[in-house]
View 1 (cartoon, one colour):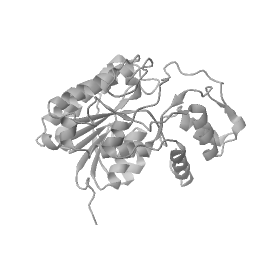
View 2 (tube, one colour):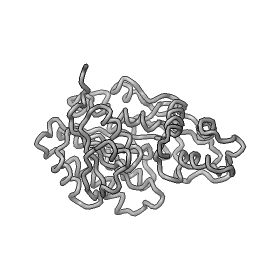
View 3 (cartoon, one colour):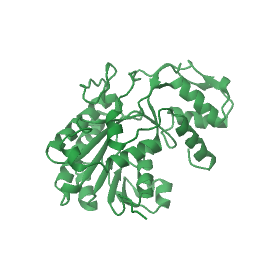
View 4 (tube, one colour):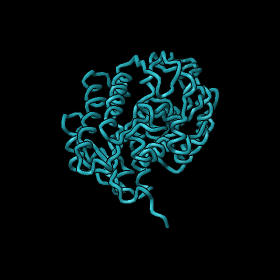
Length: 327
């Protein structure tokens, strides 16, 4: 039996309280990696990860120096940074954007470059589609970005500093995530709202749903992030194709409307079509309207891209719910 390339490799995951971070940790466990997860308190460790017996290391990443101390304590081979500030509606403090989206990333890069095993360390950082900005007409990873939100601007600063860190020899990659969906999303987001609606018969308030998005199921996004951690170090450090851009788009390469996604999700969840209140609420002001997302670099790096439709992800989501998984 061939051992997994991640067997016995020490992987540190930051941000496992989020649904994508949790999925990355599970993917690493399935590949026989030694997984250490960062939590502010061990009491906040997700139950499924605690049941898997993962090592949890307490660190409050809002404090300066915490990332450096964490890297020194763990001495990881591979780091996944899924920490982000500004996704939740109550996260709008300038200090939060600066510390958790920018300074933390710089601190990680500095600590990893100073690590005794720096030549073999990899950092995978999750960026955001909002780095492009709403005025973007091309989403090619080498095109200039024009973010128009505080969140997008702070995430772009992190992408830029990591791209510069590669010139200093750090094997670091930023994956710009588009619309990742799945179990464990924050309450109030689209999928949790539809899941919660199974417990009532009331109309479900929705926007008109004509906005187009590139949908990625969380398990597919996690698989892609983990496999980016296995790409050729030298190609990453020297900006050789497909790593010849500041970031890689983490997307499927196909757009589907919110309305089509909701209708398909409703079928899988057993929600009656007449309950879907399209047009009952206005579209979010920060909604990103964009052309199709180029994924040629991701395809070249991994040999695959996430499925071009959300159908398979929604089927897996419904299957997990039917098996008793937490929403």
